[in-house]
Length: 487
Image (cartoon, rainbow, N blue to C red; front, side):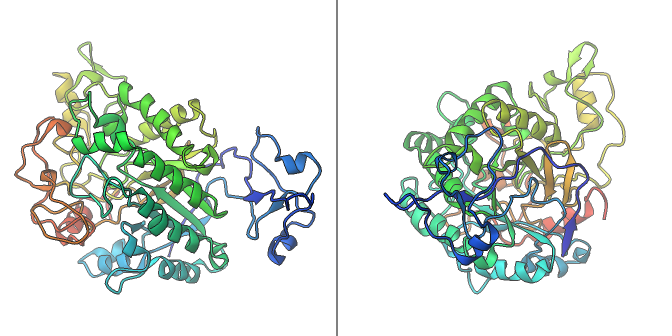
């Protein structure tokens, strides 16, 4: 079992209690509490988030009653907590040569289809994972990391990660996917767990960057923008899951190589706000955001910064940076956090960064800045991220395990996490028939010469990859070899 300890003081978030002020119609009395809730809060009063008005019931002197499992939410759920180790992933990692060095690391549990809720082909379902988490918890705190990933028309700009639900199946998403998950999470049996939900990666940023008017446009993203089902689905998920007192919602924030440009950053923040206030959700249902999920962007580029220049030419003008405002994930996560607060999200929101596959160690890791003969030589010679293009996302050759999971590693960052389980494929390198809705994306084909989304460069993908989510031993071995920090 893995424990991650805090390395910075907590953020200034007023404790938020999951509470309700449900009054019986016409009686002026509060709805009865269960014995646990009454014992926890005799008199039916509780705290609320700073800067917000008291509920009407409290202002009028009537009872303001917390739910049965009401307790102060942790400012940072990872602080002082162990994090759940998925025994299924751990067994696969341990079976690999050298894998025992990381088999005890915590990783995300991906609920990528309806069947995953109860378990696929005899595998563990959601309740199985939560029951195992209770065993791992012991007397302390424990975080369970879940990836909510099944939107209608999922991942409209790619094929490898398409899902089972068609673009119009929003009702099925709500009733057969989100509702059952929320029901399980709300079971009082699991009230002592800190449940982190990362909500719908590869969705909302597509509605900014891959729609009509952009050279990266795809017809499917236009469909999802027009029908509104990404917005509705995310809002519904945030509302239902965030209504469970011990759930911490972290919304997907893409990565710096996706939305780090001026014309993407602000519109993305506004779109995230729109989704977070859709379908009955409120901004308070968002505890934070996660960057770089299942991606490869370097955590910190030490050999150059966005403020550098070579012979009077800004780093932003290099081919690699290409006018982006950021050169790595940590600076992006911190900068985007400020932007999100500026559009109305709580000043106490925290960021997660997925460091599962962005180590870029091994013999190819630069040890000094590049030559100052040109801005491109300076950037390319010094950058850790060895991808051919920052738009490459599938099973990248040369990648390595990144920083091990840890809490509060930097200002505004709740944790480094391994949300993507290392060794699980991003997508098949050739067409593989399947019943999961996963298509063949040429970005996973090592012979592919690219498209507008990667500047028409080679894909950089490893060969012979299985379907997305399936175990890819060759990739796992490469991740071990190129880990940074080294194992």
